[in-house]
Structure formats: structure tokens, C-alpha cells
Image (tube, rainbow, N blue to C red; front, side):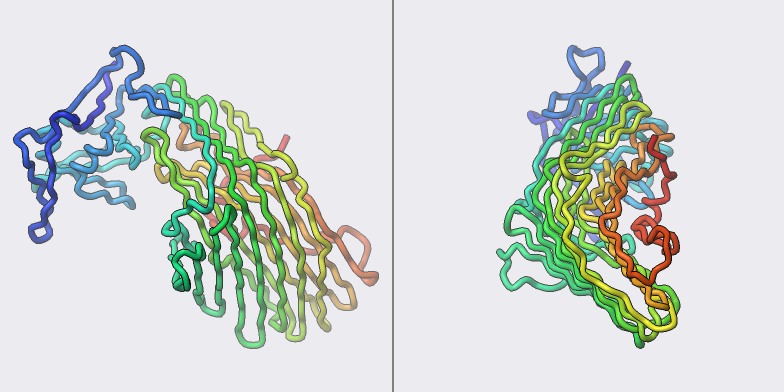
Length: 471
């Protein structure tokens, strides 16, 4: 069984200089020997890839691995939207690198794709590709990462406001570059979003203010969040091109959430929105596999107010513990540690009022909302700890207040070749607070109230997974 692994030889490496002539990039070798290509065979003693901490793997017979130096030297352009890669054809030929249709191309720490076509034009080799899974590329693999994410070490260039599939950078300059503070202020139609994220200490402090003003309707939603550093444990095991297990766990989660909303005036029509939220992007690499961990809050609201209606509510939650998922073969197991199932809850204060109609305000936030991807492909589209507040008033004189707590997860095992393991699951559901005034009819408080769910509004593609019932 033969595989191909291409590296730039340290002894014979030529110095490559990139120069520009118009729009054409030309690579010039300073030494006569550009580089030497080292190839190995799976029949060699030991593993066929260098031993790296947390990473041990045998490449599949169809896999072609180009290490980072080769990619940097030979790759001219990569179209990440259409997954088309353009190489310098002459340098590929000089290095003895032959890319063929049907092979799996593994660009170390960059891309994993199956080649669908190879064409040459004007000295460039154009490689078109399609999806390839990790278990197709590796015959055997143990991929393990355990690391502590300290927000003090966070790269502020990796902090964005996420909206409509786009990453919006901070747009308010900090008074002090060493303050550890990042600021946003964006206006979207009738809404204004103001936010700060402070990471000077070993915790992230996020303040979010959403203001709504249109016609006779006004409102504000304020969230103040604190999240301490945490330990992430990610493990993948592949044997004979089959994914045996996957583990994604986040332990040591600890934080506090203060929530408040107030709405005044409005229309009978229902309003709902999922405003942009900060996203902290934490990339890490294990061997040749690039992962991206995204963490941040997700926020939604839904209101229905008459012209004279008002609704307000405020409360606080605190939590500690861990949450994650484990997949063994086709078996799914939630990983819930410590007090994550039962966060501490402070007494809520709120009311709703109006005349001759229904007043309803609901507000939900996920903290943390964690996602994991490899080679840009989502593995855990979301792992959410979700908090909800609600206040309603119906005439005559029935006021209801409630708060809810849930943990929800979405899993997509396409990257591991397990196409049937794509689902979402509710891991925890609890009513933290339930109040109704004496004028309310009997029955459960939620019987006549369509509840808000983050999955109804946020990231439809991620939340479109089929639902998996807990058994």
C-alpha cells in the first residue's frame, strides 16, 4: 500500500522569492536545486507520518499530503468558496509532485479535499475538488488535544460581531490599546447594537445593549456576561478507515449572566429578531488538522405589544461545570459535569401590563454557545447553555412571568464519514421560575404561550438538523 507525502528537504531547500510583474506572480529559485521531495511508503518501519504530540496517523492509499512548506511554495491561489486550488505547474513538476483525479489532497493545516479534475493553463495547475472525510484520508488516526483557553492570551484580531453569516470587526477604538477591551456599535435598521468585551483578566466580560426604536415602539435588552477560562478536550480515533469515537468536552465552565429587558408601546403584530453577537474565534492545530473553536453568546427576542403595552423582566443566573458530547460508533452520550444541570437562579423582578389586548415579551440568550469545526466543516454546529425570560399580560388582569433553562446540542458527523449521525438533541430542560397572578385561569403557564427558542431564529442551517429524542 503506497501513499505520497511531500516535504521540502531541509538540506537541499532552495530559497524561493516571490516577485510581481503586473498581475503575474513569478517564483525564482536562487539555487539550482529548488527543493527535494521526500517520499515514503507505508511499508517503512513505524508509522508513516512523523510522531507529533497528540497526533499519530497512517495515511490512506489515496491520500497525497503536502506539508506547509510545500503549500507555501507552490500554492498560487485558493478559492475557498468553490474549493478550487491553483498551483505553480513547473514547480510541481520539478518536485515530482503528481496530483491526480480521484486522489485525496491533504494540504497540511489548510484543506482536505478529493480531487475531481486537474487541468493546466498558462503554467498553472488548476485543481477542482469535492468534500473528503477524515476517515477517508487516514487509514488509522489518533487525534487528541487537551488545552486551557485563557482569555488573557486571546488574539483580539480573532474577535468579531457575527451577523448574517458575516464577521464584523470591532469599530470603536479603545482608549487604551492595553486595556484588553473590544468595542462595537452598529446600527441595523431600527436596531442599535452596543457591545464591549473585556479580556484583561482570566475571564471574558461581555456587555450587550440592544435598543429598538420604530414609530411608537421602543425597547431595550441588556445582558452582562462573565465567562472564565475553560479546558477543552477534543479526541478522535479512526481505525481501518472507520471512525470509532469522537469526544468534545468543555470543563471548568464558570460564569454569571445578568439579564434585563423593557418594552413600551407597539403594534399587535409580532416582532422577533436574532441580533448580531460577539464571536471569539479560537483556532488550534493538532498534527496536520486545523480546528476552530468558536465561543460566544447567542441572543433572540420576540415581542407582541399593543399601543399602551409594557413588559419588563430582570434576573441573574450563575453556573459552573462542564458540557460536551461523546460519540462511540453510532452511540451518542451527553457529557454534563458539576452543577451545569442546575444553575443558581436569583429571584426575578418583572411585570407586563396593557389594556384590551395581549402583551408578551420574551428574550433568550445562549452562554456559552460553542461550535467546533475541522477544515472549515462543522462537527459540532452548536453546544448551547440557554437561558430564557418571559413576561405576558392578557386582559383582564392575568400576568405571567417565567424563566427557563436548557442545554441543546447539534452534531454533524459528515467529517467522520458517519452520515447518519447528523442530529440535534435537548440535553437539559427546566423551568426555573413560574409566576402567575390570581386573575389567571388554571392550567400550566405555558399552555397558551408560544415559547421562544434560539433554534427558531438563529443560524437556520446549523439548526436544521433532525431532532434526536432522548431515550
